[in-house]
Length: 389
Length: 120
Image 1 (cartoon, each protein chain N blue to C red):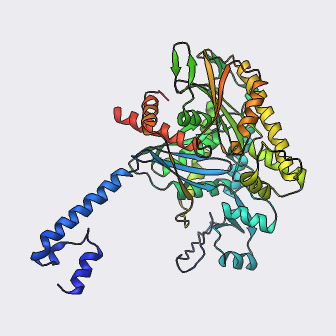
Image 2: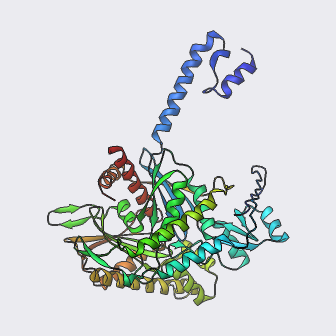
Image 3: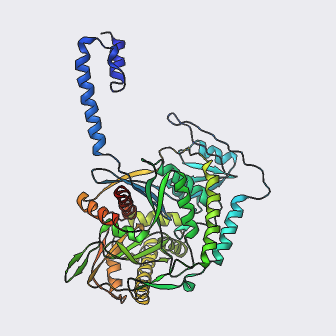
């Protein structure tokens, strides 16, 4: 066998036909090909992506999740923020010579994601958000276009016809007249246009689906029952669940973004720098009084936790909410990430006069991806339901 | 509509796409946003919502017929925004970081099974 024929065979051993190989070696090669095909098939089966996915379009981050056959969740995420630059020769040169991800709309360049945060820290000015308070930001003309563009790239195509997808939406806030109907319709229509079968899902319910809070009663433990809280950037979402059903859902505005904004105003330091310090270094258990950024963040975190626990208690009482048994609270979301947050929350919830007996306050195992994982689990349930029909 | 460009280096390909915007006297996005804001300002606030009893709890009544017309209007608006977007192509291949999380597969499957029996 000469080298050219060997290269042809080894170059693409699965796809190339074996007819060019001499008959003496055909049987051996066929066996090798079959073994390699089997290995490839087995590897593919192990990590096979299952139908039913989710999209969490947060104020701060966008997360798309799929589950594999081995039980892993593959989370693809991108920061949902951008930095606007006027189009000019200088900015065109800057972007041409850099690795920044950007798009051009009209007379502006919009740098996307983490690059937006980096360049704003370097050049000054603040990042812009295509979402505000958990919904499309009506103050930015291009917000819908940017977010839909991001979604299309990150979500990609469905893996089966009309694949079920659950997209996360916040509940209606109790301290604002923000309505998410339009936001929901735009996303539903857009995901349908990509070939999916979309349904919305409440943000805090996803925390329950992912973390499974347990209600302890005299008759035994009841799964998927309790209080689930998602501390997002735009809103804090709360759900009271019983056996996977939502008994009550609502949200409270002025969440993580509010903490960043107020800390920025108090210290005179840009929001993007505040965000970086908060995400990398903040420890709420320490005495932060000597460092002004951490001091400001600690103060506003305390205010945030006291405010939301107070409002949660009042709202459940107003709605006549009750659960028979000892209730568990599960908390997730980016705003809950700083060290010491759960301890701060636990102390505050004791003062909140909730109409329940709380036996545990638990942090989600992966607070950043909990909502998206929970929505994916819900979507997998939709897919299973469609097979049962 | 906009231009999408990507930086060139040894491994990336510059793709420049210019989408010609039809010159109109009215900016459609601005109009859509203005109408959406006007409608949303007219929508009932939280305190104006009707409450009904569900599972012994007070919850907002979503079947308010007065909001049906508003919803239909918003549906049309939402659709009009999406048709525009379909013509845009993305040049940001590979965008987004990837991270894996793991859960107990048996517990997850139990949850999926429970959820598959729910109505909504």
